[in-house]
Every structure is written in structure tokens, then in C-alpha cells.
Amino acid sequence: MNLKNKNVITLGAGSSGRAAAALALSAGADVSVHDANTHISDLPAGVAAVPDATSATGDSSSCDVLVVSPGIDGNSDFVKSYQQHAGEMIGEVELAYRFYQGRIIAITGTNGKTTTTEIVDRILNHCGVTCLPCGNYGQPFSELPMMNEPPAAAALEVSSFQLETVVDFHPDVVIWLNFSEDHMDRYPTLQAYKDAKLRVFENLGPKDHVVIRAGEDVGEFKASIATFSTELEADYTLQDGWICEGGEKVIDLSDTQLRGLHNAENAMAAYAACSVFGVKADEVNEALRGFSPPLHRCELVRTLDGVEYINDSKATNLHALDSALRSQSRRVVLIAGGKQKGLDYSELLPRLESSAKGVIVFGEIAQQLKDILEPISNTIPAEIATNLENAVSQARAMAERGDTILFSPGTSSFDMFSGYEERGDYFRRIVNDLK
Image (cartoon, rainbow, N blue to C red; front, side, top):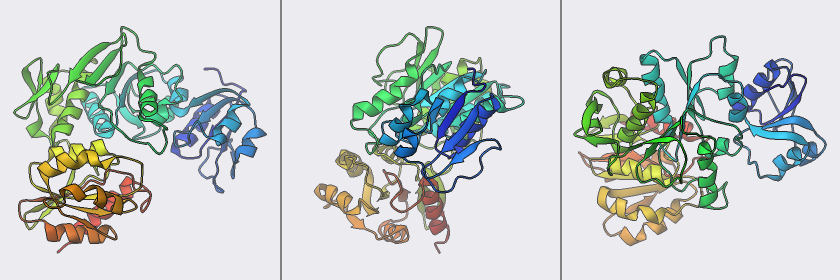
């Protein structure tokens, strides 16, 4: 992509927007970063800052390339005001793709992306293929092409928001983990959300590879396919704690700290994708020995008085919450709640009936959740907590030795916290302070 002497506007001054601006600048473009916030900081020298940007700012601006950060809705009037005077509109992932020369494993799905990205990164680096986790997790993808020695491979976590603005993006391997309802505060329909994710397949050809959870409906494409599942017949399955390839036990998960069936599927998907690079099962066993999933993902915080406390703050949708419940072997006291995202929590009633002994709800949707749980209230009591400290205290009173207190909110945290990380850190502090 030739950006020399081109005018590039980046919308959004977050980490991906700043990285995109730096990459465009390094390619010889005249770059400005526009953001609705009053203060814009940490821009590379030579990049102009345009704070307090509005649709009126967009109406009076023009550029050769408009780079939209994933946190900004591409269908908003704000973006459209800039797009009308732009030669091309792309996202940060698309921009980085046009400059990055290495191979790409793109990881998408509603849940499990970050853990799978971490596993891919660990396997490839252990097996001698330099790799970095990037995209929706890790560092912005745009930073890789600017490195003195870019990695040979990118473990690229891509969200639906990032995929909305791809054009030529063509990964070597795609991992599709799962699909379920999420982000209904951004998308008008569930199909619109799925269509955004499906764009990851748009440019694949017969020499490319797709790793997909068995039973997922993603349409047809020309790439070769490998399937995985802990429940259905697939190329990669689970038996007695081992990942099986073609029915043969190859990866011993008991040597890892990956808990639950959902994490077994994440490991299967990562192994299948890395197999394209020629890695062997014995190398993967070595790579995963002692591996722990990233924080806030079914993270065992502590065991107190025989009760496990698990931090699954990353569960920001129903599928993640359901997976966390499904992965537990002990009776659960669930702490759930947060921001209203328009999700149908009644889908969880059968799972709660089979695995929970009680539910503590909090946050913006607390009363809604309690009302939804009314049909099972005779056997699964539900209580409202005014804050997270009280929720932990109420859950502790409800739990008995041998139980698990599972903090798996099932929605985002922006009603009370800056994000799932702050929420999970706060839960961890509360639990570690218990006497």
C-alpha cells in the first residue's frame, strides 16, 4: 500500500488508533487523529491531534484514507460524516495487514478468543516460530510491521468490530471457535453480528486453512477444514483429559491448568491451527506444560473453607456464562449481572437448574435477572446485591464446603466499572481480603 504524501485520518485515539497513525506516518503519509474526547495524548511526533471531533468536523474534513478504530460504530453519523469525503475507509486491522509480511492465524468467535490466542502464541514460539499475540488482545496489529524484526507469525485475535472494516484481509489460518448472541447494543439483529464475523472468511482460497468447532453453521468456502469438539464427532476430540487427533490421544491436558470443556476446545483449536506450521504433538505437550489461561477467564482465585472462588469476569455474554457453568464439577453459587445489553437470560434456566444452588444478581440488570429467575426460585434462590462486595458476602453465606462461588457476570461491566479487567481485579481483591 502506497501512502507516501497521502492524507490519512484516524478516527479514535485509543491504542489501535495511535498505532495505525504511527504506521501510516512511517509509510510517508500526512496523518491526523480525530477523537470526540477533549484530550488526546501519546501521539507519535508528526501526527496532528484533532480533539472534540463531531460530525461537523467530519463534514469539513477530507482524506485519501480514513482508518476507523474498532470501538467506533462504522454506521454512526459521526463516521459517515468523515466517510463522505474519504477516498477509502478501512480499519486498523486492514491497514496493518497491507504492511505485515508474516503469516497470520486469525482467531475469532464469541468466546474463548483470548485464551486460544495465548495458546497459539505459546505453541509457535516454543516450536521455533516467532509469534506475537495482537489485535483485539495483546498489542495493536499495526505495531508489528514497524518492528525491526517483525515476528514470522501473528496470533491475531479479531472481533466483529474489527472485521466490519476489512477489505483485502487474508489470513493463512482462521480459527472459528463458536457463535452466540452478543453485542446486541451495537448490531440491529443477531444476523448482522454474525455477518460481521463471517467476513473473516471472505478472501480465503483452497490453499488456506480453517479450524472450526463441529456443528457451527458458517456457510461454504474453498479452504481446507479441520473440526474440533468435546461433544460431537470431529477431527479433534477429548477423551479422558487427552486431546485426540483422529481418535488417537496426543495432548495431555492434565499437565496444564486449563479447566473445563471450553478450555479443552480452545486448546484443540490452537493445536489444529499450529499443525499447519508443522508442529508436532510432543512439542505441543512440552509447550503447554503448566500453561494457565489469561486472568479473568475461569481463574481460580482461592479456596476458603472448602469453597472455590472463581473469577470469570471476562464472561460478558450468555455463551461465556453458560460455558463457565458447564465447566464446573461442583455445585455453583453464581454471581451475575452488569450492564443492560438486550440479551435473553431465560436461555440459561435449564443450565442453572442442573448446576446451581443459588444466584446473586447485581448491577443495572439485577431486577431483570431476578424476575427471569422466578420460575426456578423454589429450588434455585436468587438475591439482589447492591454492589460486588455485598454480592460476594451473600454468595459466601449461601455456599457450603465443596461448592464453587462463580463470578461470571454474563454481560459487560460499563454500568459500574471501566471494563472486565477492573471488575475482575476488584472481585479478586474482595475475595483475597476475606477472613
